[in-house]
Length: 126
Image (cartoon, rainbow, N blue to C red; front, side, top):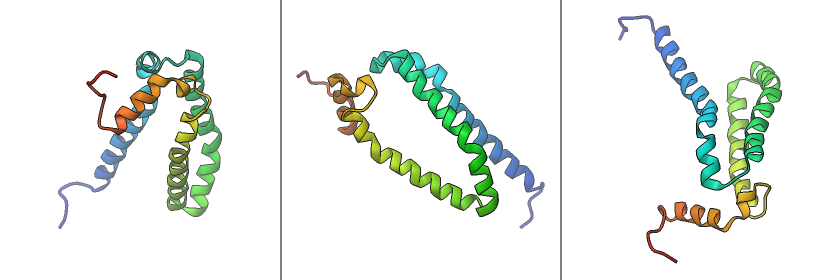
């Protein structure tokens, strides 16, 4: 079956939407910064520093990952990314048990976190 238009435009549209979502997801932090501070009670400097550290790591690793993608292909880079993301998610409990963020030791933070795991905030008073 032949499409009535050049298939390359479908690729361009998909890449456009993907990049738009990806860039907005990364830069939406500035919009979410005040609600994050209000919700968790974290210090402005620590929270902004964690976000800035993520951008710094991204800038440092981009040339290396670009070379790796050129040599080995995108499949290897994606597999490494999935592995690192999984490892990071597995390390989250260690952060919550005594990590560096001040709210990690906050009892109210732990209650909110538990309520998310139980299907939402509890309506009963303790």
